[in-house]
Amino acid sequence: MTALRTRGGLLAVAVAAALVVAIGLAAAGAFGGCEQAAKKAGRPSAAVSSTAHGAVANVLAKTFATSVHPRVADTWGEIEAREFVFNAFQQYGYFPRTQEFLARSARGRVHSANIIAVKEGESAERLIVGAHYDSAPLGEGYSDNATGIGMLLETAARIKAQDTPYTIVFVAFGAEEKGLLGSRYYARTMNDLERAATIGMIDLDAVAGGTMLSVTSRFGGPTWLRDDALSAAESLGIPLGTSPAAKGRPAGVSVAPSDDEPFALQDIATAAFTATDWTADDTGLAATRMDGRLWHSRKDTVAYVNRTYPGRVKRQLADLSRILETLLTSKLEKRP
Image (cartoon, rainbow, N blue to C red; front, side, top):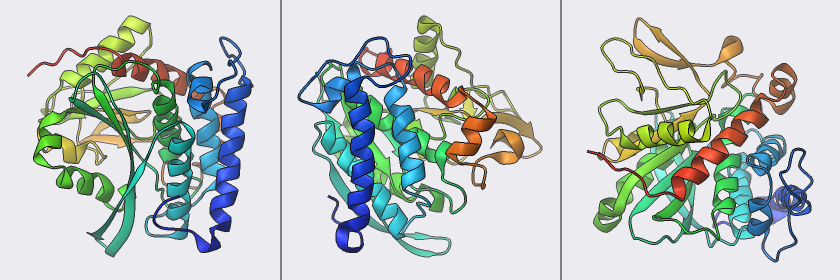
């Protein structure tokens, strides 16, 4: 349970119950298209590793979106969302910690928190994998960003017992919609040792629901992690796009606000995954959503997205799960 508790704990119990159902489905191998039935295991993360790629992320994203919404920063909804994520990390064998913070936004002071879980690797070099758990006040925040949280949690479970060349730090960021407050706080408060050990940051924001899965680096920042992601996708035979060139900017970079930005400003390599539709307009490269902008709208719900684009979310999460597992369990080709 997080340091910030819900009213009487009743809402937390309801969310935890929904989470248990999702984990139970994984343990039972109850996902369509599973490569093999999950073996019985003492730890749910072992069950996840036996399911089809993306299957657990798909169920968790639906459960998260429909059980906890809206998840506006500094509200009870965000606290419930935080507890959902914290409990999931615990279920998967991690010892998460809550990093609370106070920050100023355009509309005043915001009280929120990041949830951090660490998977020790073969070296002290660190890769940060992050996704924001708050949402806009409209819709269920399914694409933006229940899909990112589902993928964050599945990936944490999937690689829990695997050898990784680097220590992986999973972070669920709070208050992203208020101005990247959680990621800014996390990046700002890293100590010198943590900063020196951090070789890259992977951001998962609205990773399913748009027309295509893509990856970008931050404009002006190191590009090698993005390039490694593209190489991993190519080796797996997975189509992975990137942003087009626009207004003197090269292809493959983004200027859209997202949680990779505070890390790129510290010269840390970033790879931001999204299912965004990229367009170039008079102001430069911009990120949009299909269908009259799905994100931040009443259309961003499980029912609407899956009815309108059947199979899309499941397919994109499956592809991204394979890419992430490859990246996090491989020795990366770091380039200046």
